[in-house]
Length: 173
Image (cartoon, rainbow, N blue to C red):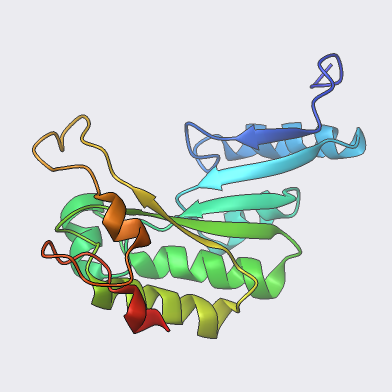
């Protein structure tokens, strides 16, 4: 009964990016919407314009995982390009009614330096506006990145720069 038996108020399309199962996600979202159930896409944001329009026509909210803000990081660790994700974010802001938030995982020594975080924050403010939440989250070693340390709490909370090159939050003021 698509969530009605459990009293669910929303369905999150996640764990595998909904882009992978686009047709199924859209079909389920159409039925959910008719039944008053909200739809949330949890995505990396790598999606072309036509598919993006099809998906987000039926989504009420999205959480877009912006891996990093630099080409170097994305090529080295993600084999992708941040431009495609930035296009998705701009499209969500300017061409849809979807509520969306951005999540960036800060990986020590890779994308946690103050300059990159500052550029990312400035891009969000100037291109998307102050009403778009940007979540900076902590990395923990797993799978192929076991040799890296966890993101220190100070990286997420400090107003100063740590020795590891963690974000300098004063630079964002």
